[in-house]
Image (cartoon, rainbow, N blue to C red; front, side, top):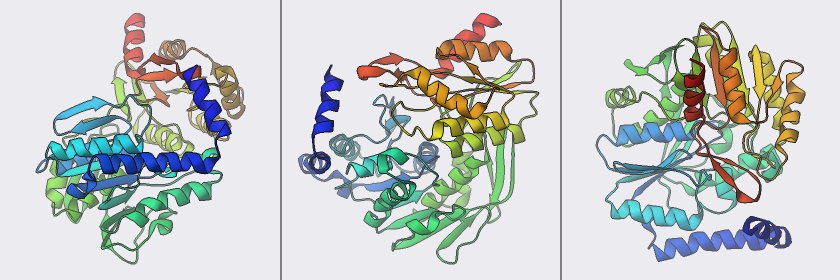
Amino acid sequence: MLNRIKKIIKLITPSFLIGWHHLFQSFLGAVLYHYPSKEIVVIGVTGTNGKSTVIRMISKILGKKHKIASVSSIDFMIGDKAWDNNLRMTMPGGFQLQKFLRKAVDNHCQYVILEVTSEGIKQYRHKFIDFDIAVFTNLSPEHIESHGSFEKYRLAKTELFKATKGVHVLNMDDDNVGFYDFDSKEKYYYGINNDYEKGKKIKAINCVSDETGSIFEVDNVKFNLSLLGHFNIYNALAATSVALSQGINLSDCSDSLKTIKGIEGRMETVISKPFRVIVDYAFTPNALEKVYSSIKKNFKSNKLICVLGSCGGGRDKWKRPVLGKIANKHCQEIIVTNEDPYDENPEEIIDQVLKGTGDNAKKIIDRRTAIRRALEIAKKGDVVIITGKGSEPSICFDDGKKVSWDDRRVVREEFDKIK
């Protein structure tokens, strides 16, 4: 009932008043907590994909010599203490962010790393935070219905770079990098394929990815990642660029990154034998394409079996058949299931995904049943990939109802039943 009342209020309230409300919350938090961002180095990471992984990598590198705090879609962290992000919001509200920043300062952290989203920027959650470093991972269509167009989505993210005058870290291989090329004291451009005409270049060469991870070199320093997926080379380069801007050398970056054995719900292998089961957060077309392509390239699998849905009822309906089409392109067995329907009919969401799969898909509404079916189908040497939720702790239904959930836990429970 409370959620319905909130929705009615949003519908009848002029958009400019809602904007002022969010802005005031950020301002109030900054005032009450005495502008904590002025007392700590703040790093903002934005882009469509890879933000949480980059944050974890930066934390690992900087954490070797400094006390770190961070906020991502996975968790909150202050020093050695971490707790799950159960808000189902990648970027907390402006007041909550200011409170977290004050807690980080009071716990003597030297750096705080924040995942900055276009929705957060739209709601002024980034306001009254003094960012010292801004990182751009990549950009592809997302949140189109919320922003009105891809161009407006892309434009929203520029606000982080306009507000950051210190260090800018930019992916020079991304076609949209030019839109984030604002004035700053220092610029780092990272990538594999291209060269940018200005700034400091962090370029990876001799890149090799397989089922154990990736290796690459930067200026004669070898990096060895245990994380699956070629795209994690880009994430590592982004984190390394941040570290270099803070006086940490490449060898120390390499040493720190090789200690990361996995990241929750990000290309995470849950079962390795007799077939492999991987759970990943991918819910955008670009991310899904990279995940499937990476698995096909790096794993010698007999068959690729996928379980997918479409993230967030009421959001980005355009991408539902697109996700189905991508699955149909790469996977031999497709199971389309429920994800986070919110107030939408989950069966209607699934039917829209199925428009892209053609006849090469099974429709199973219950997510646990869908996962169990994928495991039953799998034979020795196959790969099962379950996307859309990663390590998220719940499934969201109508009227604010949440059901406890974890794809990884469900995989293990169902696997034990069929062994």
